[in-house]
Length: 82
Image (cartoon, rainbow, N blue to C red; front, side):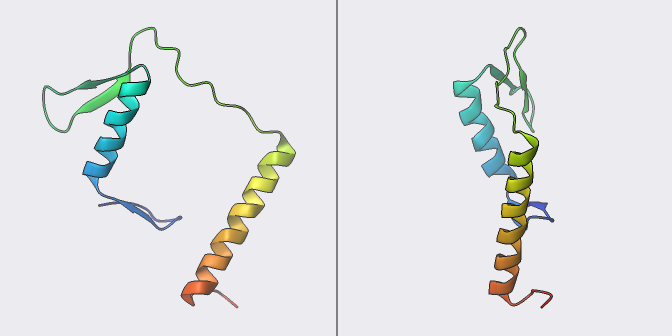
């Protein structure tokens, strides 16, 4: 199991591989399936993914919303600091 401890997210390796397989169907990503675990990389001359950038204000708002969500989640589990 893979865990992103700061966010409490748990994913097994097979789920991650399935997501990578799906992404490689829609983007310029290739998989190297000669040996396990498979490798994934951008294809040569791939354009990558164009993601919008956030303004400083949008970044702050997103960070505050995430912190509020994490605080509410901790309180719901009874692990809050209050």
